[in-house]
Length: 303
Image (cartoon, rainbow, N blue to C red; front, side, top):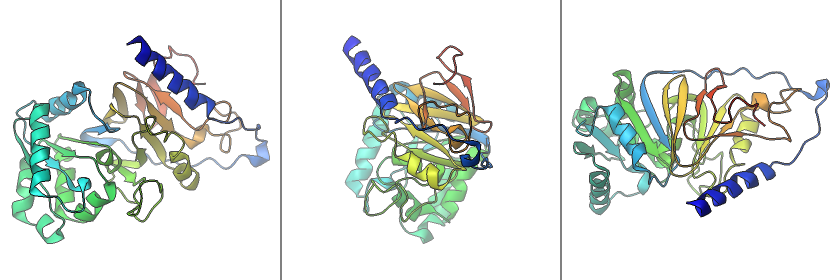
């Protein structure tokens, strides 16, 4: 345990050290304030996981929000591969059985005609939760964008249900689709840029610290400063309800808010040219007002 804690502390220190100092901006160099348009989640809940989910309390929270372990949920494996085989369906079923779900159905199609059919959407209409697996997020877009299936996903939230997902299943929940390029997952602004917008005016990245991705969202925020960037490390999640997100799991979540950057703020909140700050388990953040509600830093300024 001590060794793991030291490794995590070292990682956080490296993140801070990787932010190079920038000179103070003069008034003439500070850009006009950006108009933000983040909106609360009108109803229901989101559980957004940074990948490699091992902490059992994360999925347990999802099932609690769905109504308990017997609540009907639908699992969407579209991100896993271009062709989802029966063997993959079976692997997904085994995985969710091991997690403890007892009343779930794995649904997949790449055919929009099928995705618009009554038979396909029927299980979603009865579901209290929907879970998106990991893989490549653009595959989920290709399967369901513009279909009745996507409409039914939104209706799950409208009736107070929960939508969750890990890795690609996290990124799809934002409005801007980070790493949505069909050629490689290292391109941040690729040929697919629209997510499902369960969180509006947000770009979500995953596997953040584990894969040394903590600076990657900066590219998107520099091009689209009106967005809020959320980067989740592995085995870590945010639970989103109304205007607030809460961090759960084992590591950190990074928040990228351009109003804190020296380009947009003569007195930037983030010192030494920082582009993000970190929230840990138990921390809460109002993403509409862009303010920390609870931070384990004990009330000290973010620095």
